[in-house]
Length: 99
Image 1: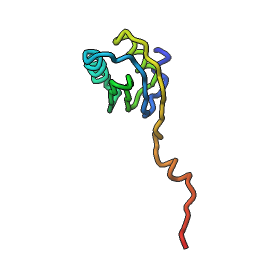
Image 2: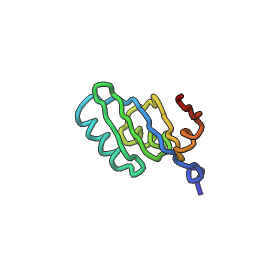
Image 3: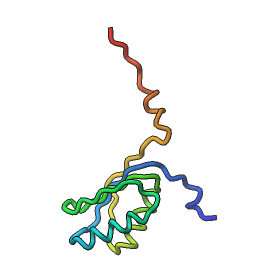
Image 4: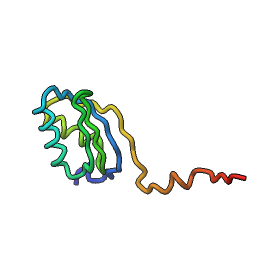
């Protein structure tokens, strides 16, 4: 077994910067992203040279796969982890009753 099989993928959104200088690059990036089964949603912003992906994945693995298949430098700009259980953040807030 590999070390990667023990890490648990969390639901997160990741913003990466990659050089998308033509429409063919955007089509290639879209095709690569659609073939990754762990990515649920994506957005490609050609003007800003950014790709936003959301789903249950390990961010470093997705960035490495994108770099290898696109043969371009990929820079992770932001990673936002979503709560896996979700209810824990709502329960930790104090309840305020209005009088």
